[in-house]
Structures are given as structure tokens and as C-alpha cells.
Image (cartoon, rainbow, N blue to C red; front, side):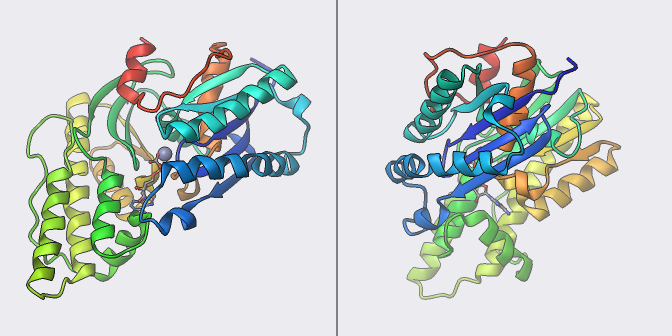
Length: 342
Ligand code: KG4
Ligand code: ZN
């Protein structure tokens, strides 16, 4: 394909209204992210009804900003991409309806992108994904370990069987009285703390699945019990001990996958991949096993539309376009996505 492909991408699956214009699946020509975090922080987490209402209020402004920063016109755009799954139903629908309207009015093909695939493809922004590669997606919604055999072929090795790692970071932060989103606050506290709390090790098996709910419940109970006894919680220490327990488990499963598959590339993705300790520990284990470690710039780890524009590019090349019957699929996780696209 010789001509440049320019895609306008929309992301509204959770609490960020974002649009981007991306050239050839990696070159970001324009990006706007309008975050609702401050509003949801007042409630200790994302309130779905408020999220969809705020997307509706923000989306026109986000579109205007994105086009303003772009040194071209809508005529230069080849396709409109949008996240259709997974995420909050009402939030997804705002992005989808906007994408359909743009596609109809400007007569551009519509591309439906799975949000988790978006996180993975953020790895094409500064580098290029080399196949085959192992991929780990750690976000507020999911914890998935995969093999990407090629652009079109994937195998899911394992997922979290209960809470995602991001959810647990947020919950632990909440019981420690930290604001939403908890991940960055736990990370900051952990830097100041010592690993002095003895916490249970999550799932001690050799599968590629993850389970963090036991660790979460243990910490929630510990904090409540200590409070009832009038004992002080050493927040920084608990944050550090939690982070080590959770990250150790992730590193252990990734090491297992590296050893068993012999794959020499690894990509990290998703909001929790902004975590420095996780990045360092995974980078270390990759180096020890001669595996090349890739992770997006922190800017592109949490939700943004640039990653959706990147993931839409291979679909554009294959002419995998959606029609106007496109609907939001709140629970289409990566497992269902792979099965659907077999
Ligand atoms: O990918 P993302 O932006 O949204 C979803 O697709 O879920 O991920 C959000 C999650 C939240 O749980 C947030 O606490 C976590 O990513 N997160 C972090 C860090 N930055 C964001 N977790 C740990 N350390 C961080 N620095
Ligand atoms: Zn995400």
C-alpha cells in the first residue's frame, strides 16, 4: 500500500473522551484526551451514568480540538475508527454514534476496534511490534496474557479469573483512603514504604491465569481489623507490600510463558503498564531471558484514541469495515474477540 492511510479514531469506553488522527498505524498527527477523572474521584470510582452524560457534553469539543490540531482537513481522512467493546455501554454508545455520524456525513468507512487490541497496538507508536510476541495487557478492566503470532493471529494464554490488577490497585487505594484512580497513588506511596506486611501469595499454580481477589480481600480485612482495634495502618508499607505481591505474581506468570514458548519479544500494555515498578521488573526478567521488552510511552498507556487509530490500521488494510448496525458490546473481552475473529 503506497498511499498514506489517515484514520480519525474515537475512544469513549470509560472515563476519557478522546480523539486522534493517526497516519499509517503509528504516526500521531493529532490527539485530544478529555479526562473525567476529577469528577469521578468525588465518588471514589467511575459512575457510569455520569460518564456517558459527560461524553455527550464533551465529544463535539474534543472533535473540534482534534481537527484544529491536525494540519489537514476531513477530506484527507480515509476512515473513522471507534472503540465498540469492551467498556461501559452508555459511554461506548456516545463514541459509536459520533463515529457513525462522521462516517455517514463524510462518506468514510467505519472501523470497529476492540479496546484491548488498542492497548496492545499502542506499542506501534514508538517502536514496531515484532511477531511473534508475548503480550500482557494490564488495565482497569482486564489482565490478559497472549501470544500474537501475526497481525491477524492471536492465542490467549490466560486471564484474570476474578478481579483485574487495575481494579485491585484501585480497591486497595480506596481502603487506604487514597483518591481514584488508585494505581498512581499506590505507586507513589510504595516508593516511600518498606515491604513489612506479610501478605498471601496469589494463585500458586502453573497456569497462565491470574487471581487477585484473595490478595484484595486479605488487605481489605486487614485494614478493617486494624482500624477496629485502634491500630495504625502503615499505608506506605502496605502499599509497597501489596505492589510487590501483585507484581511478583505477574512476573512469575510472564517468566513461565517466556520459558515455555521460547518467544523472544514481549509487549506490555494497558493503564497499569504506567507503573514504574511493574515496567522495571518485567524489563529485568526479559533481559535475563534475552527477550526484547517493549512498552508504550507512559502517555499512551492509559486510555487514549491514538492507540485505537493504531489498532484500526491493520483492519483498514484488510478492508474489515463495520456497517451502521454496529453496536456497543460492553463485555466482549479479548477471549470472545479472538473466538469471533478465528
Ligand atoms: O487502561 P486504563 O486507562 O483503563 C481501562 O481500560 O481500564 O487503566 C486504568 C487503570 C486504573 O485501574 C488505574 O488505577 C491503573 O490503570 N493505573 C495504574 C497506574 N496508572 C494507572 N496502576 C498502577 N500504577 C500506575 N502508575
Ligand atoms: Zn483501557
